[in-house]
Length: 120
Image 1 (cartoon, rainbow, N blue to C red):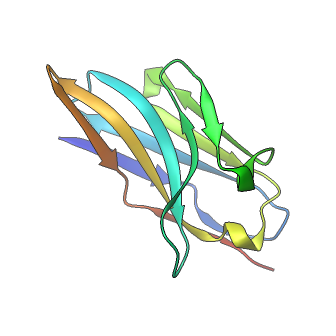
Image 2: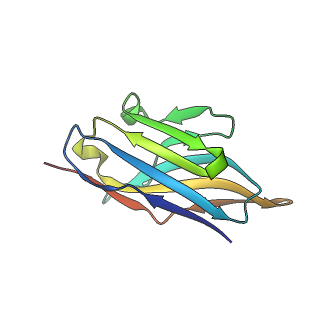
Protein backbone atom coordinates (compact mmCIF):
# COMPACT_ATOMS: atom_id res chain seq x y z
CA UNK A 1 0.00 0.00 0.00
CA UNK A 2 1.35 3.41 -1.01
CA UNK A 3 0.19 6.74 0.38
CA UNK A 4 0.89 10.35 -0.50
CA UNK A 5 0.33 12.88 2.26
CA UNK A 6 0.38 16.60 1.56
CA UNK A 7 0.91 19.37 4.07
CA UNK A 8 1.63 23.08 4.18
CA UNK A 9 -1.53 24.63 2.79
CA UNK A 10 -3.33 27.51 4.42
CA UNK A 11 -4.44 31.11 4.16
CA UNK A 12 -1.95 33.71 2.97
CA UNK A 13 -2.15 37.32 1.83
CA UNK A 14 -1.40 38.29 -1.77
CA UNK A 15 2.34 38.51 -2.27
CA UNK A 16 2.99 35.98 0.45
CA UNK A 17 4.64 32.55 0.35
CA UNK A 18 3.78 28.99 1.24
CA UNK A 19 5.68 25.73 1.01
CA UNK A 20 3.81 22.53 0.29
CA UNK A 21 5.21 19.09 1.08
CA UNK A 22 4.22 15.69 -0.29
CA UNK A 23 5.55 12.61 1.48
CA UNK A 24 5.22 9.16 -0.06
CA UNK A 25 5.20 6.09 2.16
CA UNK A 26 4.58 2.39 1.91
CA UNK A 27 5.90 -0.24 -0.48
CA UNK A 28 8.15 1.89 -2.70
CA UNK A 29 10.89 0.58 -4.94
CA UNK A 30 11.34 3.71 -7.01
CA UNK A 31 9.55 7.02 -7.59
CA UNK A 32 9.62 8.32 -11.15
CA UNK A 33 7.95 11.67 -11.80
CA UNK A 34 6.28 13.68 -9.05
CA UNK A 35 4.00 16.59 -9.64
CA UNK A 36 1.66 19.15 -8.19
CA UNK A 37 -1.78 19.82 -9.62
CA UNK A 38 -4.45 22.23 -8.52
CA UNK A 39 -8.19 22.56 -8.90
CA UNK A 40 -10.10 25.77 -8.30
CA UNK A 41 -13.88 25.80 -7.82
CA UNK A 42 -15.66 25.32 -11.12
CA UNK A 43 -12.44 24.60 -12.99
CA UNK A 44 -10.66 21.51 -14.21
CA UNK A 45 -7.63 20.13 -12.43
CA UNK A 46 -4.45 21.50 -13.98
CA UNK A 47 -0.76 20.67 -13.78
CA UNK A 48 1.21 23.24 -11.81
CA UNK A 49 4.69 21.73 -11.81
CA UNK A 50 6.41 18.39 -12.27
CA UNK A 51 9.84 16.98 -11.52
CA UNK A 52 11.39 13.80 -12.90
CA UNK A 53 13.67 11.41 -11.09
CA UNK A 54 16.70 13.02 -12.71
CA UNK A 55 15.65 16.46 -11.53
CA UNK A 56 14.33 18.03 -14.72
CA UNK A 57 11.27 20.20 -14.17
CA UNK A 58 8.43 21.84 -16.01
CA UNK A 59 5.91 24.47 -14.94
CA UNK A 60 2.60 25.92 -15.98
CA UNK A 61 3.11 29.32 -17.61
CA UNK A 62 1.01 30.94 -14.90
CA UNK A 63 3.48 30.01 -12.14
CA UNK A 64 6.85 30.26 -13.90
CA UNK A 65 9.23 32.45 -11.95
CA UNK A 66 7.09 32.28 -8.80
CA UNK A 67 6.87 28.57 -7.91
CA UNK A 68 9.71 26.08 -7.52
CA UNK A 69 9.31 22.31 -7.36
CA UNK A 70 11.98 20.15 -5.74
CA UNK A 71 12.36 16.68 -4.30
CA UNK A 72 14.35 14.80 -1.71
CA UNK A 73 14.73 11.27 -3.01
CA UNK A 74 16.10 9.98 0.29
CA UNK A 75 12.89 11.08 2.00
CA UNK A 76 10.52 10.22 -0.88
CA UNK A 77 9.24 13.78 -0.59
CA UNK A 78 8.43 16.53 -3.06
CA UNK A 79 8.07 20.20 -2.28
CA UNK A 80 6.42 23.18 -3.92
CA UNK A 81 7.74 26.56 -2.87
CA UNK A 82 5.18 29.19 -3.82
CA UNK A 83 6.20 32.85 -3.76
CA UNK A 84 4.44 36.04 -4.84
CA UNK A 85 1.10 34.33 -4.43
CA UNK A 86 -1.93 35.77 -6.18
CA UNK A 87 -5.65 35.36 -5.48
CA UNK A 88 -5.92 33.31 -8.67
CA UNK A 89 -3.60 30.72 -7.11
CA UNK A 90 -6.40 29.83 -4.70
CA UNK A 91 -7.23 26.15 -5.17
CA UNK A 92 -6.93 22.69 -3.70
CA UNK A 93 -3.43 21.46 -4.47
CA UNK A 94 -2.88 17.76 -5.10
CA UNK A 95 0.34 15.80 -5.15
CA UNK A 96 0.84 13.10 -7.77
CA UNK A 97 3.56 10.49 -8.15
CA UNK A 98 4.41 7.62 -10.47
CA UNK A 99 5.64 4.89 -8.13
CA UNK A 100 7.16 1.52 -8.81
CA UNK A 101 6.27 -0.83 -5.96
CA UNK A 102 7.39 -4.11 -7.47
CA UNK A 103 8.35 -5.87 -10.68
CA UNK A 104 6.11 -4.56 -13.48
CA UNK A 105 4.07 -2.70 -10.88
CA UNK A 106 4.00 1.00 -11.80
CA UNK A 107 1.04 3.04 -10.64
CA UNK A 108 0.03 6.67 -10.38
CA UNK A 109 -0.94 7.84 -6.90
CA UNK A 110 -2.70 10.97 -5.66
CA UNK A 111 -2.68 12.72 -2.32
CA UNK A 112 -5.79 13.88 -0.55
CA UNK A 113 -5.27 17.55 -1.42
CA UNK A 114 -4.45 20.62 0.62
CA UNK A 115 -6.29 23.94 0.43
CA UNK A 116 -4.38 27.08 -0.51
CA UNK A 117 -6.29 30.35 -0.15
CA UNK A 118 -4.77 33.67 -1.18
CA UNK A 119 -6.81 36.55 0.15
CA UNK A 120 -6.46 39.82 2.00
